[in-house]
Image (tube, rainbow, N blue to C red):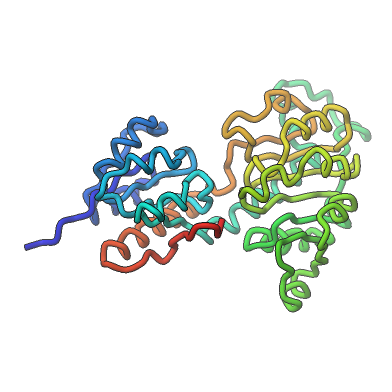
Length: 328
């Protein structure tokens, strides 16, 4: 008699190849349109499924987990970040949580460099000018930005993505500095030509560019608060592809408006998809809609991680990418 297939509910549309494989392996319920599930729909899914596959748009908090049925034993997150899931409450309910690490490192690092170039070389202004049909022709003083070579880059969070950013920035001739919970091994520092700062305050005060590459945790919420942002040079640029909550967005907006910072490249925002509306039309701000992992290769690899985690769990083993409370 064939073994009963796991019931898997997916909260968002995923790449077609991933959805097809989920259907082949499991009793999968897929989303018909690419819109987030309502809270009530997620609660209903958790009440009857064996596995839930959420994304960053789903807030799987303690209240929702409290409504989970006895059959729910795995939350296989589609994405690396799990700050939208109450991992501790899930653990207490006997529900494992897994994620999809290590597949978006290069894609996100590419995005960091793209935003850095967009702001420092004023590409955003150039695009708007061309789209509006307002270009009056080349002029020696028009759209003058600043080169990346020779600038000091301060990386906040020197994990896989931070190190990938460092390697790319090295190729542009930038000087690499970083602040991290733990100092890197000497050989890694040497390979990256990176300078470690124990004091974040001291680092941000000296950098030409700050790249935020740390996760959102209680200890990193508003890590770049108003006081720290004030330490930055007026000529400095800040780039964030990690989590919006790491920066005090209101303070950042005020400083950009007052020309106390030269610019910002933002792919994430403190209040989800709703970045501060005052940022939208600023000439020195490049804003993208959380596109850091948005390559077809990366999104399929994320799905393959989800599949592997669920299949390993179905075979009676611990998912290879299980998330433990307190790790993120």
